[in-house]
Image: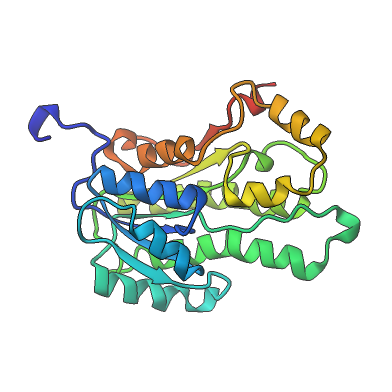
Length: 257
């Protein structure tokens, strides 16, 4: 579509990096962005999962990148190499993350630092490298972090995960102000419980009673990855050109109660 009839959700020829693209929210986001015309760099530690995602993308120009986001000291050079090969980026989505359904008494220092490293510090390392001349395309800049309702509400055995996501919300707000002069918007999407492989791993630890109680907390039912991907695409596109420093909650009514 061209001219006045073009949808502000369309992103023809924009180049977007999606981390965590091997499955779940990251995969659904990558697929949707490709349908909207974007060229997508799919990054994850899981090479087989990335290859599966690549087979679902529409249109040409996409690229797979295997990377371990615990290696934050290498993020800057890695992102520069990606942009040098793929082309300067218009934005990125940090969907890579790890859960930690562990009560405090069983939570080790090593575990909470690992969660914080991938969920929060990797996002900050990507943001630090993104405005570089070799990385940022210089227009239509948009960064989206996948946060969580666990940054806003409490839940037993979610301390490490809540720590990482609450910090991510704070990072986002400061980055939104610091990056505004560069015309780079920064926002978070905060999902409720979404049926992803990560959720399934956590769900296996629950009793039937616990599972029913969690589902009952979502008036619209549990979400699907596509529900979150729609919100991410909205924030990346020109449809959200006047939105920065915000957390868009996509939770089926979880936090309305």
